[in-house]
Length: 414
View 1 (tube, rainbow, N blue to C red):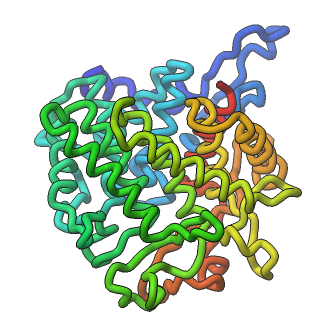
View 2: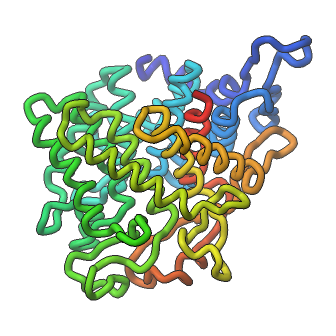
View 3: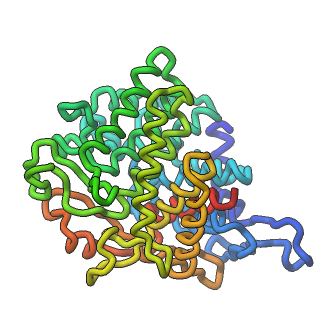
């Protein structure tokens, strides 16, 4: 679909998405699973799969995909990339054109005719801003619009110039000197691997080697041998207030940081060649990862705590974003043959825990995901302490939870 065709379609996007028709209902009244009279009046049917119910809810909350994550102004940001990745996978599963157009609207608004990305500044060297590139890779594969290719090449240039630690690890951002964070593996490496598969002819070996190296370095610098868990961040210079003076690591195992890393592992494996020598290492890391995560799963609810290994401490809470990510990682890992089948059961328990304890459905069918940590990081007043993590803002429907929830649901339905 070209830009002109999409402009004609855009004004009808929201209603088309919500007018989902089910198959095989018992009577005429049940045929329309979503009843729409205006954009503010709708009904999302509980006969749909959880993946589509949550996606419809997200689109209802954010009909403009550039404003995902409760933004007032468009921003090129990783949360958009996360939800649009989930949207792509739902579209691939059920092939509804409206979902493709939700992704297209983001690309259409954020990339101008010259291929320039709005609100993006390459010189900041933030790994976070590589994540929306996944949406452009998908759009270019479908539309072949040159502006999307030019924007992709810009993002790829950032990778080439990204500041690195002395042993070659990507800095999380230019302003976070000498630091690697678990988050950064998910922000950069799936995009880097997918781009390499699409456009990397002649440089595949170097690129794939560097991708695998990033995982090896994060394992080397952040893995706790005793628990098998990985610390949120590592400071090569050991100068940050949050960094251990001996190891350079932060002090705690944050649920979502671990979730980002697990998702990076299973998603990069989609693109890493079967015969690449580092593939075996990646699968080993994944197996070690899920073994450690399974040990700290709450036995009663199937969920995971904000600070993973300190569920017995006052103030810690069962957190939605990390829990959804772990379910996704385990379910996909089993589906792809990377993990033993026993992790399917653990993932199912985790997903049921989300439904039983953290999901709320409104009378109109809107699905809400509660107890999401809004944001957490390291640096400044963010000291990486237990007290810091448990006192960050908690809100409902954070995209960092709803996106993984959608993808987890898709994997469990396979």
